[in-house]
Length: 235
Image (tube, rainbow, N blue to C red; front, top):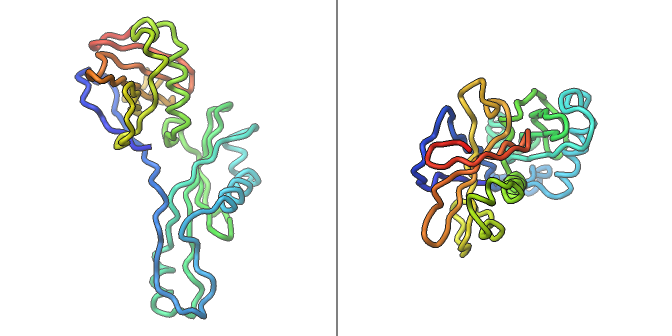
């Protein structure tokens, strides 16, 4: 989900906005003889996603980090091993380069996350490391959850009014005609005493046909809390 600051004049305090980006899968192209072995996948299929998810759940290192339950899996762009690409281009009789995918698995129940590197189509896990929940990339599901929490909050309803129910999530760069748009600004606090230094937090800003409303709504997805901020004052 691509996010950009819409120019709302409210000041940022004790935090640094971060914009994790999950780009669309890039096409990986290289020359090969027709008699060469099967090339690595140019993009992930649903079968790949299922197999990667199964491999992650079966790996004891991953399970030890994320804990019990059904974690969520986020897949990044497949990349080819540079050394293997160079060797293959020099001699196409060699095995084709291996595609590797960075995978993030997070568990909202345990608030734990792991990052791994998985080969495709072998689905072999090469490395696993613990990941702070605040470093887990944001996806559309997070934006939808944040807006739902905001709409259910009495303080937000009081600040925005009846029109709150009609706001929809709008990604940056989206050309859709959405009169009442809610945009997401992922953030991370630099203050260790701020929960958002460790929690997964974001701001919601609200755009109407007349411009942006003079407030922001901070949503802590980890604690499921909502705070209204207007003119630099927190409510």
